[in-house]
Structure formats: structure tokens, C-alpha cells
Amino acid sequence: MATLARCLLIALWCYWLPAADTVQHPFRGVIYIERVETAPRPLRMHVAKIDLAAPGISFKLSPPGGKLETVRQTTLDFLLQEQAQIAINAHYFLPWPSSNPEALLVGFAASNGTVYSAFEAPEQRYALVPYAPALNIDARNRATIVHRDPAFADGRHILERVEVWNAVSGSAQIVTNGGKTIPRYAPLGVLQPGGPNAYSNAKSWYAQINARSAIGISQDGATLVLFTVDARGGSAGMSVGEVADVLIRDYGVYQALNLDGGGSSTLAMDGALVNVSSDNTRGRSVGSSLAIFAAR
Image 1 (cartoon, rainbow, N blue to C red):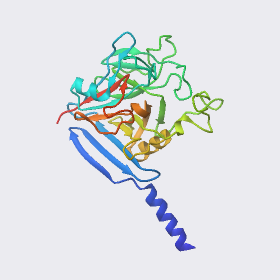
Image 2 (image 1 turned 135 degrees about the horizontal axis):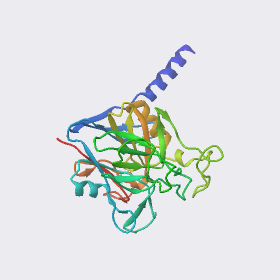
Image 3 (image 1 turned 90 degrees about the horizontal axis):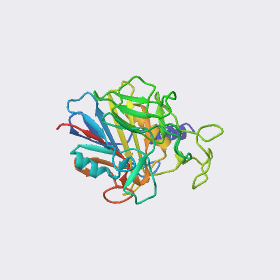
Image 4 (image 1 turned 180 degrees about the horizontal axis):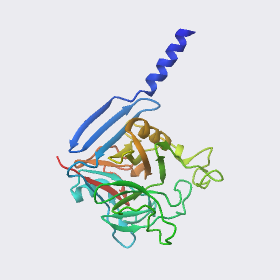
């Protein structure tokens, strides 16, 4: 029995060991990690850790445009257009599904100091929480989670006394002060049961396995972490809770947002996609992307 117990302990210990990572340093202040796992299912993750104090680091969110809020384009096309070094898809957007080349972003958005999308209580509530927090990176690369100031009806003001510069929002904050914070359904939480698969606390949208994108910051605010996981090319995808666990346990993330996922999940670097898109070979045309500029 003692031998069996030891074997079980060793097996559990090996299961939770971080995978062997392929680590690159493609730009000054940037670490890119490709991580392959075989358990709990085949997985390929892509992680970019960005030193916000490194010389040459700067950011830009897709700017406002068109008759709605943005003109859709692939994350790769945005990276190439801006001559950036890294880019990740960002906001959920409407209308969807749609061939409309323009989009309304869901949640707070700012590009180079211009706020053009407000905090909101979206009609779709089985996955998107009302007035979801945003991650703001000011002109000096100071990253902060920001919240709606309810004193202003327009939804374009924040509670925190920081400069709004480039801000992204997702479906919810999934890591808060180093702990996993996955939204729950009413009456215990803010999500509304229903949707295309009758989501509920017993069958949460956040527990579904899919391609995912997330963005987070370290406790000291010095490191920005970009994360995607594929659901194609030999990778089966993850739940949002699994993403939060990995970010906390293995990459030192203290605050994180869940960004648009599925076919929208895209990480582009150095002129090419590094992930395998669930939509098409160049990635989905999305409502917004965050570009990162870095020096060699």
C-alpha cells in the first residue's frame, strides 16, 4: 500500500509539473514562450511576457473608424499596417456573426488617449458581464485595471485616477488580486442563464473548452502577459478557469481579463501568426487588436 501511495503521489506531482517550454527573446524586453502539454488534453499555448520598463516598448489599440466604432481587420493585418512587432486580438464585438466590415466593441476602449467605446451592460449576458473592467496602459506604460465610474451616465469615465491611453476590455476579469474570479450565473452571480446551450452554473460558458485569449499584469505592474491557446493544429483548447489557473500558477499574473476567444483568438509576432487560428489561415477579421512595438 505504501508503494502504491508513493506512485500515486509521484503521478500527481508529474501531472502538475509545468510543461517544457520553448523560450525565445525576439525583441528587447519581450519573452515569447510556446508551451506544449499532453494533459489534461493536447494543448499548445503561446505566452508573451513584456517588460513594461524596457526601452522601445509602446502600445496601440485599433483606432476608431467607420460608421460604428471600428473597421474590422485581422490581428495580423493590424500588426503589418502599424509595423508593430506583436499583436493580440482584444474586444468582443457586434454584430456577430456578420459580414459587416464595421463593428461596435463590447466594453471600454481607448486608443492613444481617445476613448471611443463605453463601459456597458451588453444584451448578451450568458458570457459577458455588465460593465466589465478594462486594462489600461497609459502613455508611460503603466498598466492598471480600471472600472466604470457610475457617477457618469456616458460610461466613458473611470474610478481610478490614472491617464486613460490604450484600454482593452473582455468578457470579465478572471484573475483578481492573484485569485481566480470566474463569473457565476444568477441568482449567485451576474451572468444570466440561457444562451445557445442553456448555460447555467451547472453548465457554465466559462467551462467550455475552446481557443482562448487573455491579458494580464504581474503584481508589481512591471510585466504585461499576453496569452493564447489554440483549438486547432493538435491543440484542443482550454476552459477559462484553466487559463486563469495557468496564468496565476506559472506566469505570475495578478490581474487578468478574458478576451474574445474561439475563432477570434490570434497572436501575431514578427510579421506572422504564431498560433493556429480556428477561423482561417490568416485569422478572423476582428473588432479590435492591441499592437505592441518593441526594439530588436
